[in-house]
Length: 53
Image (cartoon, rainbow, N blue to C red; front, top):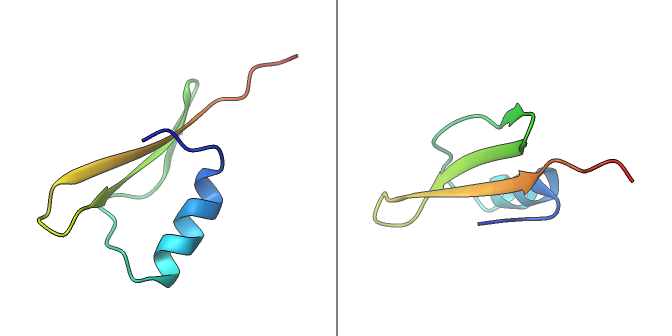
């Protein structure tokens, strides 16, 4: 799922007790983290890298 502010999403999800599969990772294309749905299926949250104006 593409998000505009990954840090804010992570903070809100941590407060609700959501389970993360990994730590946030950053690369040239952006940042990502994986969470699990109630059945244990992975869901990736992705914030694209900002492009210079």
